[in-house]
Image (cartoon, rainbow, N blue to C red; front, side, top):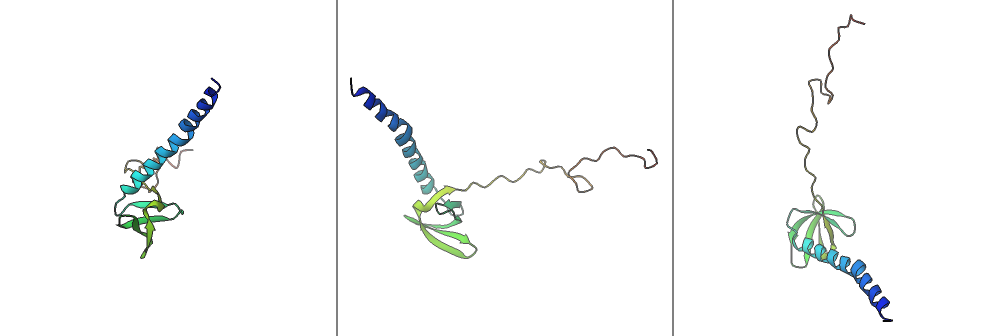
Length: 111
């Protein structure tokens, strides 16, 4: 009976610390193994890059136009999702080039 609080603390530690960390590690491994050429990634160093070539344990990524570097697959922190392009009907443009709807026309002589 005196070990029951200790067992409870160990279970709570596992449930709140170890289990979520291992889940994140598995998701990161799946993301790193599912990369393809042309994906935009954020390296763990904070550098944005585009995948140009895949190898078993490393990648060739382009960090600037014409600058390709070899990095370990584990250096990829996240895959950057491209935002959707704005829909054509999101902003309505009118004849005068503004995005405001013209109001009723007033006769300049009326005041």
